[in-house]
Length: 263
Ligand SMILES: *C/C=C(C)/C=C/C=C(C)/C=C/C1=C(C)CCCC1(C)C
Image 1 (cartoon, rainbow, N blue to C red):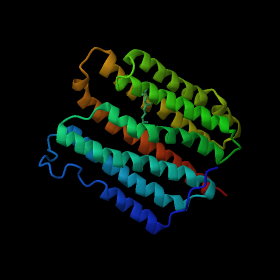
Image 2: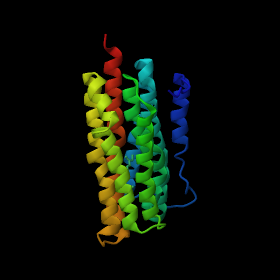
Image 3: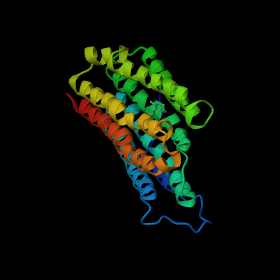
Image 4: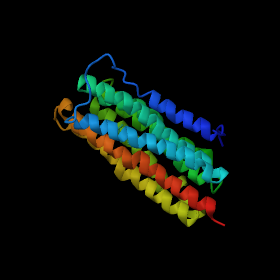
């Protein structure tokens, strides 16, 4: 297991403050400000704040759980931290230019999505001996999914073959958590609380994550104008993070606390 340095409360606080520091508008010289009628901009603002609050919560609650659960909470906090900082920037770009290429989201996804998948490995590793193959399969499937999508959206590859590659990567991780070794370790060795957390998490990866390939489909494969769908996609993707990043982390936090307090 990777050992991460333990942060004191003070350092955690400083880290959170640094997050706010990073929010200094990148376009301060520009007189454009967020308009109250700009729902895309407001959705960036809302989700950033929710992610900052979640980050503080996961890092602080880390002190409350047993040692073997701490890494899971650290990773949840990192996911929300990375996404918050990313959204500060995306909001500024949106307000200043009235557009945010979907490709920008891949910068965030490339780090946060593998970290979310690692959570499956981590919660199993807290209760059983898990072969590293599980970790690598989750990683590889995730990267194939994201790189495929990126090559399509950034124009390096035809949008359809890129989509197919991305879908295969997603199918591969779904297989691992519903039918593969990870799912077997969960079914055979995990206590009831961990099993229900694992189950909720894999349904988030199925249902909650489905909006991204659906968005890709409507943006590039349905014949509609990508700039037209961009507004709607931005709002949907921003709100989806409440489920896919925050609620996902809360499920892990909840099982970590329950298992830590179990006598
Ligand atoms: C916090 C951000 C999350 C959970 C983002 C997840 C993104 C995906 C599950 C993207 C999936 C895609 C496919 C399954 C097919 C190809 C296109 C993608 C990359 C949009």
